[in-house]
Amino acid sequence: MTRAKKTTIAAAAIILGGLWAYPTLQALYQTVHLFDEDRIVENFRSADRLWITRTMPASTAPRPYAVGTPRALPETFIFDEQTIDTEQFLTDSWTTGLLVIQDDQIVTERYSLGNTAATRNISWSVAKSFISAMIGIAVDEGHIASIEETVDTYAPELKDSGYGGVRIKDVLQMSSGIALNEDYADFDSDINRWGRGFATGGSQDEFAASLVRGREPGTKNHYVSIDTHVLSMVLTRATGKTVSAYMQEKLYQPLGMEFDGYWITDKHGAEMALGGLNLTLRDFAKLGSLYLHNGALADQQIVPADWVAASTRADAPHLQPGVIFGYGYQWWLPLSESGEYMAMGVYGQYIYVNPSSNTVIVKLSANPHYNDRSYIPSNDFANLALFRRIANTGAD
Image (cartoon, rainbow, N blue to C red; front, side):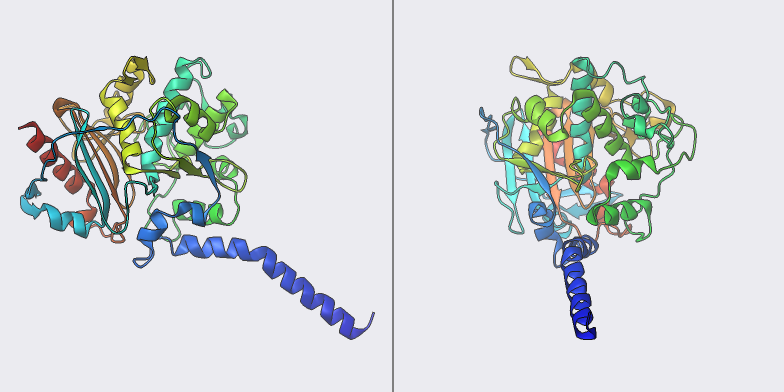
């Protein structure tokens, strides 16, 4: 073979290799720049352009909310002894959608920064509460015998990992004992390492199986997003269905979701259960409304009432709310006498439920300053203060 021919073959190999690697490099680039201020809003409503996804078709029997008398938002609210201007707070937290439902009627619905009623927005960790609901349904249907069973009973590949011997209940309550750094502001944190691995074709199952134990399970509430992926592993093995397929059947269709939704998946077909659900503002609210009504819609019990009750209370000392939020089964629990609970996702995603005022609030955001601990619009307790003010104003 001549030198010229060898050079040509080598050049072709480099070009082909580059073409093969380009999608992976592009995905990694998109992940690294996902939260850039000039991209974050568009990225949060365009996950299907950035990643592999699996669609859930809109319900064949849609259930739109009734629209009540429009209600103005309170002009101000109090947080940390400061009077906060509501409109400025919504602007400064880069709110893309706000929905207030009281007595099962929409009383406030707003969109901004280019979002509309048809925009599917990424959930981030709000998705965890949907996964919890499906675990409850799977228990009720007998696919999962008990949450006292260990996760490796259903996902044996976890047996030799830090998850080996850990109860499903401890994983639901973010008390798995797994050692994991979930600081989104730290480029080298475990959660960001997971994100880069996801973008470059890594397996979420293998990542979960690589994690180690840091403490005794069931003794400390330590937020580990991979716990929710482990729950999805249990769910899919127990039911024999993908997360999307099971959600379509058990939640999406009966709740009357009005628009197609979708889950981000990894290259191995596993949904990003810890935060990859994409729905419209109104369709996110339907889970809050379902839980407000103890898991029932009309005459159909969709999620068992006892599961809703157990999911939204802290049943151990290490889960109790105080100066920080308490935790249930993938739901956040404020210190409250009104039975409030919340689904929360990074960068400002919330489903807030207040049973005492019959209120559900959904707030979607794309806040690029989320990791600034001193920035009040990024503070979950500041958002809670706003939600309480809205709920109590409506109840006056």
